[in-house]
Image: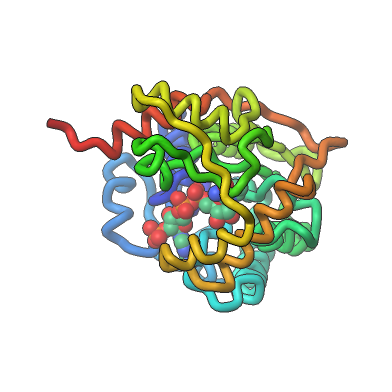
Amino acid sequence: MFVIAGVSGNTGSVVAKSLLEKGERVRVIVRDAKKGAIWKERGADVAVLALDDEDALTRALEGAKGAYLLSPPSPGSSDLLKEKRAFVDALARAVDRSKIPHVVFLSSIGAQHDDGTGIIRTVAYAERRLAQTSAKLTFVRAAYFLENWGSVLGAAAQGKLPTFLPPDLTIPMVATADIGRVAATALLEGASAKTQILELAGPRDYSSRDVAIAAAKVLGKPVEADGAPLAAVVPAFTSFGISADVAEQFRAMYAGIIDGTVAFEGGSARLVRGAVDAESLLRGLSSAATPAS
Ligand SMILES: NC(=O)c1ccc[n+]([C@@H]2O[C@H](COP(=O)([O-])OP(=O)(O)OC[C@H]3O[C@@H](n4cnc5c(N)ncnc54)[C@H](OP(=O)(O)O)[C@@H]3O)[C@@H](O)[C@H]2O)c1
């Protein structure tokens, strides 16, 4: 039995589906029983709980061979780092109490650093805290999600792809389907060492200009990357209803990408390249956003 969190989200859904397709027993974690119904139909056991409910999470993890866990977004938080530290502390205590032997945790590119990475500090803390548990650990340090571009596809359709990155800065990016598949494989393989780190990127790295070229192909019209300064991050994110604190963590993350702090560690971390390229990912997002006629 494998326990999977975040199954109503991008990566957890792929992890759970991949394991069910391989005939594995799966228990999914949902906060809302209604979101569990579809998984029950697919043959999964459903546990309804919030991940920071230490007792409930302990019970859900007990007896399982492995679990996929993540630190979900908290866009409204007024003190994100404090909130996420408390969240991860509860998660880590549940991991220890349940005696689960293997945890695959969704981390991020740049999580080797404790500072200079903005929002990525939340998963850096999670890596350090989970390392103190008795479980074996696979940290999936995912690159910048290709799905992040979904929120600006509407603007791209008007000819400009907004970006807080210098348009020619090339960085690793990855589709969440690749993350889910890699995490499922990691669970199936189990862990031999106490900790293994997978640094996960798509088939190639991209600049914002490359993404604009992919968007132009998908949309069938010219699209150019439109770089905005870092000073524009907080006003833009808060205008979407994200708290000032979280918006500032995103600004610091973009600063860390630009100055090179948010990068893969290399060394003993294993670089894994997924299969989904920017154009196919954007095509999927674009057709999902277009109502069928
Ligand atoms: N965006 C990036 O570029 C990037 C890069 C590297 C790593 N990451 C990491 O990826 C994470 C997001 O992963 P994702 O895209 O797979 O997730 P997602 O699509 O944002 O979905 C979050 C999932 O977590 C669940 N959830 C939220 N709060 C919960 C709680 N308290 N207890 C139980 N479940 C809870 C949600 O369930 P509900 O349906 O109940 O809300 C949903 O299933 C980020 O938070 C970050 O740590 C992101």
